[in-house]
Image (tube, rainbow, N blue to C red; front, top):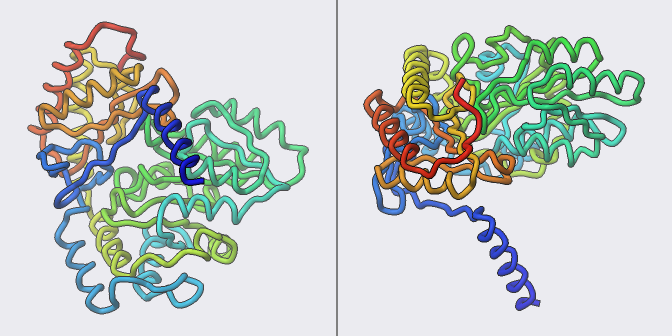
Length: 402
């Protein structure tokens, strides 16, 4: 049996290699910030999601260290047994206050939060209506729920309306699901239009604001807050604590009874060891800094404008995005890898995103800008990227900047 499994693995890896899609992990030595050492080489890091530069902030490390000395390094049990610490409870209260919701529920990962929320709220008799480019955790949550799935064209309110309209006479509940900022494109969902649709068709709107939190809205409360959509319009709000907040974990926020139902039914929470309390303490510190981080937000948005202006002037094609996620559309998978390698030789770490993460023919460099980057670092990246772009063989490389 072992030999047959090895042969199966060998054949599978050969297919991945033939398609140019094998992914390799880098070993990071030291902090995971804007400057890092990967596999023994120093780089300026333009491919993490630490948008406010808090992951290496000494205040978060101090909060985590203090909590670890007080309560230890692990929670030792599920939240439903003895794993729910006062640090978790404090973090949930802080999140609810920040987001203007009655309650919040902390999960160990964003994947677990989205799976847990969807599978707790809908089942085989129900319907999930979802954006075609939703994050994998939202896609898998819909699949695992057993609900009927209805996919609408990306960010297309009219197509979403057609999907929901076709269900007006159907039995069961309807959950309308979208990211706020899409992780591979950097664009933003039409949240107000989707909220209006949900109201019209008696659906529940669930928004994953993972890439909007910390960057948009009052006190960085996200794209949902920026659109002034309360729990009556967006009853299920999810997000992560490992991006702008600089720690780890995730949450679901909403009305108290909705959160209680998710707590009672979410298998990804019930059957998982709780997040270490020390991590929750770090997240509480990061959340406080994010709320007060208007200067950091202004700096990030200034870098976004700078980056887009430089690349537009050089006719390097970008996706339409006002977020820190700035995809450079390449098209061919190997060409994207070659550009990523060229940037690495100049000391810049930028990931090449290929299928199945994105559709075939839309491979890209996913540049992410953070408050920890300087204008000089962004200018250096632009110089290296423009040089590498102009040196590559001419081909149809996708849509133009906008």
